[in-house]
Length: 530
Image (cartoon, rainbow, N blue to C red; front, side, top):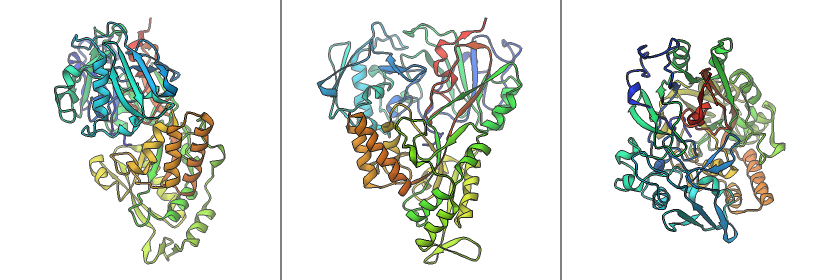
């Protein structure tokens, strides 16, 4: 999905005049390096559309405003959060019972109850709620409260990774329940149980959070943090260098410019985040399987990792990275222009005088859209177009805003980003299942392969690890023969931060990063350096 999509953040009114995304913060009350002792200011590329978990904000964990029943530690192992312990699993994996932690309050002082959990899941699954993650909770048949402190989930079928789905943030029924989940003020004025509360949101500029004194985990040492919305990579780097920011998300070439800065530290996070070109089936060119297979053979993934990512990533031979336990080891494939030519020749795509192939009077030409201001995607798009041209396919790379891209996704290719951690089902189902074609950023390519659908369904419904591995093997092999996307690279996420705090670390990250993910995934645990 796009980087414009859901990413969480927080800010505080006391910083309202301290930082904006367009101008430098004032120096009053700040240290010589441009930062105040108890605050952190981080530059990110984009802002969330909503701060409501009912619409998808924080659904994969690490929201700073909310908590889920469970959370993940640095190694992505599940641990209790709002639940007092990991769930009790009975009935052959069809019943999950959670007991709530005692004494948890929302930031408005109201107590957390089982009814809040029930409300959250029922509303998120309601067909009238405009989110695109309902399929992730498909296994849920019923959720009910058992007294004030127990929640019982009954599943339609045993779903092996269900516990990991319960990192979904819990919202207060007494606030959100009084509003339309799609349009209510809760979407921009949230109330949660997390370590921070939203103090201010200047849309297009910044979000500011302040520490939640009611937080059940103890009030954080970082008293305020601000996410400054700065779309241009170069501007983020410049503002970080000037001391205007404490940290920033940066592409590899700009992160490298801070290596000699003793006051800053670079964090490199491994991720499931991949870049791929969507190949819409409705397009007369990209809908041709031979074109898709030829593009898969023509692309030089190793060169993209070396030249675009400066080694901070890996070739993507499918949606799973090569070091994932479910990755099918023998599908790695090098650039093979001879194979690409053979595929196109056999399918009737013949070279024209200008070297571009054609079939039945139609040129092998299509538009590839990429989001404006994203240098890494731009470089991927241009490299992809160059490789495609060597195979006789004309790819016209074009930048646009997401507002322009979204209505065109059904017909035009997009340099997109996807990837989820935790279980193969989490990223693959929404990417590939035909039932989700065109559902927002789900299955953007409108991919429809019955064998892949069967593999996804088998992988989702089986609890046998061997059966699940076999299902995902079949899926990955099917994608090589019938690619709905050209998978390019898995990228590492790079962050540069002022070296003022202890406790910073990185997790294995999903595609969505910048707000919840990053070295600040556990900002509530940071301690000032002594």
